[in-house]
Amino acid sequence: MDLSYDGTNFEGWQTQLTGRTVQGVIEKALGILLKTPVSIMGAGRTDAGVHARHQVAHFSAETRMEGKHFTVGLNSLLPKDVRILEVSQVDADFHARFSAKVRVYHYYFFPGAVALPWEEPYCWRLGRPMDLQVLNTMAGIILGEQDFTTFSCAQDKAKSRKRFIHQSIFYQEGPFLVYRIAGNAFLWRMVRSLVGSMIKWAPLEGGPEIFRRALEAKCRDLSGPSAPAKGLFLQKVVYHDGEWGY
Image (cartoon, rainbow, N blue to C red; front, side, top):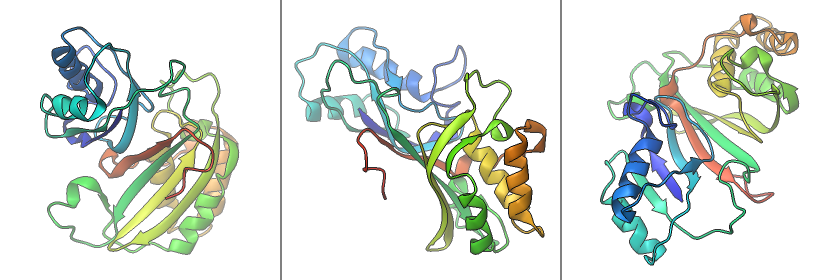
């Protein structure tokens, strides 16, 4: 299942005892459509306020509805801030999370002073120009396999803090500055911590070296502030080698 959502009014992807979650509203709609409880598994557990252009989830169910009709029926039961883009049958051994090879995130910034009303909720308004060359020097430091302890959360229960980063780049897209990062997996709030740190240190003399030393220190106390959730999008999830490009 390929789906998209506006994370503004959600407490994240994963079902919680209290609070509105993406997983929760989809499972509720599936239960109504299929007339039986259904559990889904997502490729990425996005935080509260984080959006997704192409999240992937899987579930097991018996139905005679074809993918197109299933998609239409499910969307009719969902709130307007969640859309199912496609539903298709997969092999029994497919797993939305563990079969994924690469996850791609985009973070959007507005360097200007005033963002339009419909842009403000989906970007971090910086109010100042940024040096693209300096930012890309910093972005290149994390390529390959790195230990991201500095940019992790104490609450993250992952056994290893090492992740492999395939791509890390800043570029201009119209009035927006965009950061694109592609990796095999990410720690909880890792992308927002990286983004916040780079934006904080880029204007400083020796900013890239400050960033490098913080990464190598493997100390959470050295990270910068986390970037706001509203600018972060899960752009796509890749299951086949070589398909994680734009």
